[in-house]
Every structure is written in C-alpha cells, then in structure tokens.
Length: 395
Length: 116
Image (cartoon, rainbow over all chains, first blue to last red; front, side, top):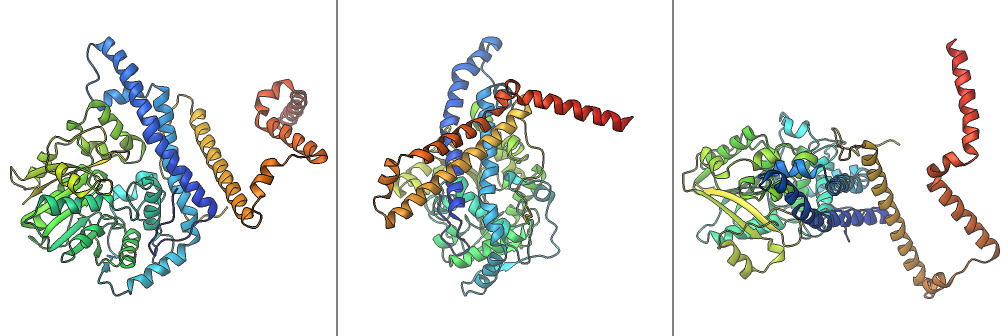
C-alpha cells in the first residue's frame, strides 16, 4: 500500500489516486520479482542450453543474451508490462501535482524562510545540458528541468512522489536508503575520517543528501544539480525536514568550488545518466575539489565486466527501454581506469557492495562492508535482498 | 481535456512484439486492469464507510439477491455488457454485417459521385 509522503512538501492524493499508486507499485513488484524470476529460469532452462547446443558455448555477454531474449514471448511481455508500469508510475502522480501546482510552489517559498540554515542558489544564466533537455530520462514526462508555473517545484514533486511508488516501500519513509547506507558506510569503513565539508553531485531532490547531514551534524553539506525546479523542491524538502543543506544549480562537469575544498564528494545513481566525456570531467572535477586525504564515493550500477552475461543483460534493460542511453556505455567502462584517469593514484581505488541499511542491523552491515567478493545477482536490483554497489577513491 | 503538464515522455515507444497492435493491446489491458482495481478499492471503501453507520451492511450486501424487475434489469445489463466486450468476435455473424454492407455500398457510391 503506497501512502502519501509524510513531509510538508507532500499533498493529499485522492482516494482513486492512492489506489492507482498502490496498484502500479504492486504491478511493478510482480514484474520485477515474479516475472523476473520466471524469465531467468526460462533463460537458464531453455534459451541458454539451446544456444549452447548450436554454438558449443554459452552466451558470452549481455548483448548476446539480449538478442536471444528479444525473440522470446516471455521477455516481450515482461518488457512491455515493465515499460507500461514505468509510464504508469508517473501517470499515477502527475494529475495530483498538476492540481496543486501553485500551492506546492507557494509552500516551497514559505519553507525557504524557515530558520533551518539551508540555502538555495539558482543560476538564471545556467544552460541545462542536452542529456537532460533532449531526453525524458526514466520516461518521466518533462524530465527534471521543465517548469509549468512561477517558482515551480513540479518535477521535484514528480520525482519524489514517483520514487515513492517506484520503490514500493523498499527505500524507507523518506526514500533515503541509499544515503543511509552510504553515509553509514563512511562512518564504519573510515573510522578515522570525519567530513567537515561535503558535496553531493546530481542530488535531484536531495533525498540521499540528507542522511549525510544528519549522520555528520558538524559537516557543511553542499548539493548540486542542473535542474532548477528539482533544486527548489530539494531545498523546501530539506527545510521541511529541518536538515541544513546548501543547494546550488551547477554542473558536476564544471564545479564552481576552489581546489582542495571538500573532505567528501558523493553521488548516487548519477554518473550513469551522463555521456562518457561528462563522466570523465565530473570525476576529474571531484578529484580537483577534494582535499588530500578526501574521499570520493559514488553509488552506482555494478560494471558489466564483473557481471554474469545474464545479469548484464538484465540490468542494461533500462538503457534500451527506460530512456537512459548512457547507462550501458557507463557500465561497459572499467571503473578503476576511470578513477585513475581522473587523477587519483594507482592504489586509491576501492569498491564495495553493501546490504541495504534499512533492511539490516548495524553488526551485519559492518561485517559485510569489511568482507570481499560479495557480488551476486541481486546487486543493484530493486528486489528482495537488495545490495547497493559503490566505488570511489581516496585522494 | 486541457493539461498543463505532459503525461507522456518524449520519444518513440519501443515495440516489443512483431505486431505493434499487440504492444498497444498490452497498454490498454494494463490501463483497464488498473482502473478496475481502482474501482474495486473504491467499492471496498464504500462498503467500509457505509458499514460505519450500518454494521450489518456487508452481510446484507453479501446476502442480497435481486428480485423480479431488478433481476431482469441485471440480466439484461449483463447480456449487453458481454455483447459489448465480445462484439468484434461476432461482427461477421450478425445482421449488422448486412447493414454494414449496405452502408458501405452507399458510402462508396457517394464518394464515386463526388470524384466524378
């Protein structure tokens, strides 16, 4: 059952809208758990053995598996239902937000005045990059940047409420399980490390930024994004939740911060939305603004060179069918090479797989993040037993 | 319908099936399934709210049997409902086909006259 968000930037959905959201969330759950399991079994029992009989070896990579699966009716139904469910996630929240367009913008303005300590700095001359303006990423109508009224926050509300349906309760009340997991990873993995100033690149509505500010209350937390309406919403949301964060409209490829400025640079589900040349620029910029000894930490999708062919195919679905064309090219990279090319030293690279903070206790979490070789077919997948993947480097 | 915010993403929708009609059918079926669920949930809400003032309401609904005219009206509505849903399967076998042919002949003749 999907309930309305609990912070002040939420709004009351109609009875039918609440029913629609719950249905769509469950439909997605059915596709991503039941149908996904059946599809994997079908591949394992029939598709892969048939290929192996014909070619004398199993399919070698994700694209080969994709080519085979496209001919299978089960994949076609899985994909068409998943694609439709994705569209329906947005359709389940947009009418209510449209109805409340002005009141949400008004609420955001008044929350901005609240004495929390957060700030919002927009750049009226900022040019939103093409990877945002040319695509409706995640099939979200209007993407992150479109505006429909003065001081608009609609795309932020769409993202927050849409993610609430999309996550179906798996990311917690404030949809911040990734932020909770990665901030606690920093606390438990780098015990000597206390960030005094941090940056979250590509923060959207700041849902994964806030856990860092809460866990490290002495830390000055900055968060940037390219989309003004998402940032207005992020600022209002943080103010409502009484967490001080400094939001700024800025591209990660050209950071308006001095060298050696931050102890921690974080991003989540961000790099894979960028063209490869921008990924390289963003990582180089992260390296530049980090202090010596500072940490770069990115929550991301696991790389194809560490995934089994079927898992590669399964995760890359979004690249082909969810308007995320940079997703597979990113996953095809060798992450340690990206990090080295950004200027980090040869042994600076690290990677990690961690259990969801919200679904584990601290002792288990602590044990897992100190162990090695934890890749499995649940890594990066929003399903039962989810694990988050991340990589980074220490400057 | 005037909408201030778009409901659909930019770009081409992928075709998963060889026949694009099947892709469209999946969309229609899922929208229909969703709305049917929305209606079912509203019915549950309706029963629950009414039951607050009439505790035996759900039992009374469960036990309700239409009598006389009400039964005939429901039978007729159900027949019409089924006819509507399954009509494409019957098109060729009903007098409608004949009516349709006459209609088509008339339309063709009218258009031919206009072209001449």
